[in-house]
Image 1 (cartoon, rainbow, N blue to C red):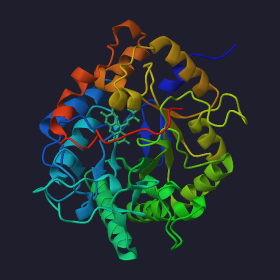
Image 2: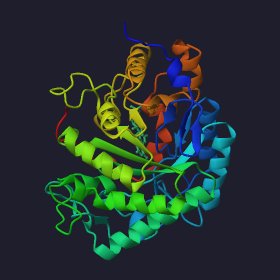
Image 3: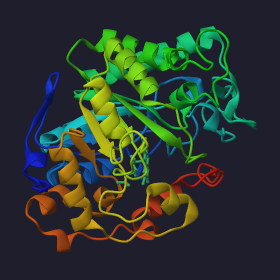
Length: 393
Ligand SMILES: Cc1cc2nc3c(=O)[nH]c(=O)nc-3n(C[C@H](O)[C@H](O)[C@H](O)COP(=O)(O)O)c2cc1C
């Protein structure tokens, strides 16, 4: 019989120099409390609450390096000399309540839409090939010098994260933002060795940045890499057409010094290559093919995935018991090592404690209108509304 015990999810895990007290992770999520590109007292209270509520590891919301092309609007974080002290206070608050903490390093690439009058609004919007989807323009192709400059800015941000006491950083290579624009064949048609049909070429820049970060932060600091097959602009997109391409990427990521893979999917249990394995999800494939510690994410506890929810207005319902049983079955079978719980963590600061104590019926359903009210009010329109899907799969 399938092992659906949750006990294993409450065992510690050590990666490099950080030990997570359990396997539950709060993935990076903007919440709308950001002030002037950095954490506010409200951000600190909010994330301290998730640490007190039992999470093993918390990722910050996406945070750009201090590079002109990374500035967009005050609602989106940047690691710079002005915000650094606030990041430090946030780190202390989260770690003081028991969770490990890592800063997610992100760059919007061609998705950026500069806001007139905001810092660096005149700086060019940069992307690998001037595209955010086939035949859909976004930014202009980066020069080699710009790629070097931006890589340096990423390294400085990672060094800052280490200096303020964070346990790690995550390189956001998912969902159709800059690093994913490099990874995805549709948005990276460069002919300089950093793009084109081969995954090794498209991965060259993101993994060069990962390697430079590893070099700067030393061997034991957590360096997570987050990737997704899907994009916000195309649910059916694939970075990796085959398991062989994922295996090749994984080997290169390992060689670059990546210490864990955070695999973002719309539903954690969806089989990725069903013709080869009827059940294995993309996180399971990543673990099988790379051997790295792997985190799964996607609709845990909820019936509708984040993008249908955010962009298509499909409100989710609760699916706690069934999802936790499936999660445990897959975890106990060795498919993945950590689980990211997103929206249910927004709605329930003590999600992990309630699950541990079996108090499933006390978990509140996430409600976008209530839980994302501040985010919707704060983000200058245009950040989300232009997203569109091209295939619902
Ligand atoms: C409001 C909101 C903001 C998000 N912001 C980010 C982000 O900054 N970086 C990121 O990698 N993912 C972001 N995500 C995606 C989440 O990390 C997660 O992958 C997604 O919500 C799926 O998990 P869930 O189904 O458990 O909510 C965001 C999600 C939400 C709901």
